[in-house]
Image 1 (spheres, one colour):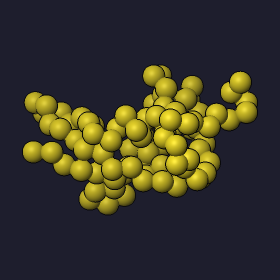
Image 2 (cartoon, one colour; image 1 turned 45 degrees about the vertical axis):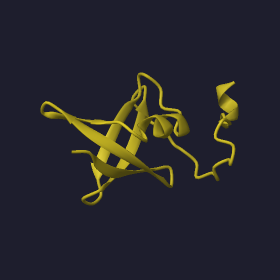
Image 3 (cartoon, helix red, strand yellow; image 1 turned 120 degrees about the horizontal axis):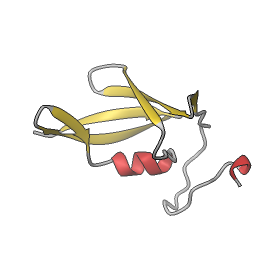
Length: 88
């Protein structure tokens, strides 16, 4: 049985699906978009805090420091990703 949860981060909410494998739950549908939209990197540490029965707040830590995300309007073109000026 699959369950859906809301992940809240950077002023936005993503809907993700979970699957149970043995005794573990994993995020499936919706998770790749979440990772892409928030530019989550391989070595990032993700902390999920339960807000209610279906919503979790996500905090992202990179090299031990919380990554701040701005509340910016999403582009209508999903193929575009804005990079902060200090990253290039």
